[in-house]
Length: 351
Image (cartoon, rainbow, N blue to C red; front, side, top):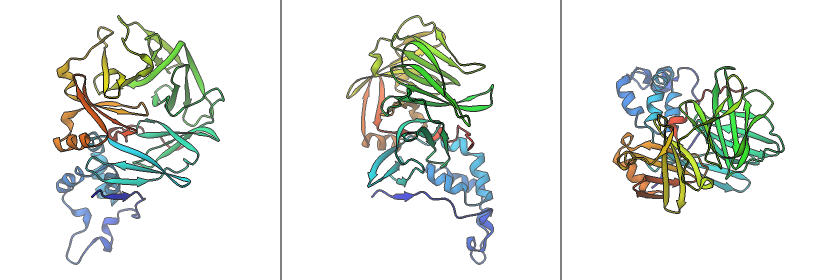
């Protein structure tokens, strides 16, 4: 039976471990529990449970914060489903072990989920015409200003990326409406949008190792620079992608940038960029066996090393959604894949 939980704010304030309610007669407070034991327990939790764990008391919070990067990196992707409940939209996050968490997104009324970046779901509303970002794990949200009338985001064709600009010490939301020639951006806390243009329609946009790459209908590769001023720089490659570019999207692992083409219902074609040769190549079959590709309808996908999970987790993914194995790798398809390892990457303070 699937277990269902709900997400709510902790009722604890300060170091709740020292309260009388956390103790029984003759027992030590929760804060005195051995941290080695607590660590083993913590590493078995899901992402939502981890947040609740970190809010129990100061001692547990200290343990969680000092290990948050390791914890989130060890969590496999989870799926998010969206359903309509009357006039309300309900979101359910499905953990790898079958547990389901129901949550609601504040300030999302009249908005559509159009993307995912840095652990934040990206929503766009027609009235007003603005972007609202919400992290479903930390519950932190931020709003970006009203967009120009000629920027028309579509839930099936938006790529939104949060990137940190070191020159201005601020986070920037970069937005592409696929198959248009303009890439828009807005600085967090500023009430304006600006853009850069290409000579051809841009198909996709992706952040990889601190840089943003774009590809156009002519298979030309670009790097988007924001420091010190916005510019779209053409990168010379020795060959062009052999693909239907309209059906292509960028995907990356921690080491490699891929171009993944949707060929048919049960087939993807994957090519990788050799940065040393600046050439698109077909990855070796042995290399592809090391990864699983999580393909999302929101066009926010990722390649993740399979060695990071146990066999039981992999078997669970094979039971859920559409999946198949080919010489190009193992692929799992869902409407929205959420990647917990991205959850704490962005320190986006409320403006």
